[in-house]
Image 1 (cartoon, rainbow, N blue to C red):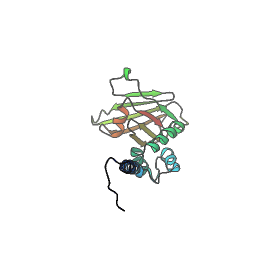
Image 2 (tube, helix red, strand yellow; image 1 turned 135 degrees about the vertical axis):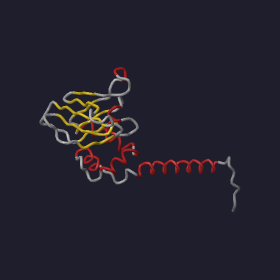
Image 3 (cartoon, one colour; image 1 turned 90 degrees about the vertical axis):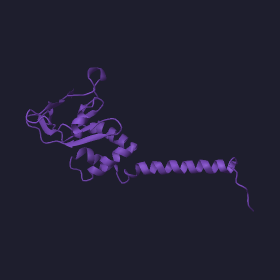
Length: 180
């Protein structure tokens, strides 16, 4: 028996709704595909170990997987040795040169030798709790992770390009800085 298919029939409405749900599920799977295989231990390792073997995979997954990014934010807030919150918009022109929190201060200073380079200077009050990595977390799930050299007399210095992702992220007043 053959029935005529009409666009305004109940069956068409059900089929259309199922097709729409299928497309939405496919889009969700595509977004989280980059995060596939990234487990809690990988996320913890990424935060705790500056030389984590899957760092590039975890960083890529964090850009596209909102749940993984939320887990990262939660873990980072719990595991960070130092946490420097966003800067108040009223106190800045939108570009930060220095930020501080209890126990640490992060400052950007232009190099005198080369105007295309900037020193990132991290001053620590506690000389026994040296962080191994700097994380700068900005809006839209973007973040920069930078392994740190050991501090000298409570100060970590990094010389980097003016146009580097690290310098751009640190200048963003909406970014949060974590030292782990």
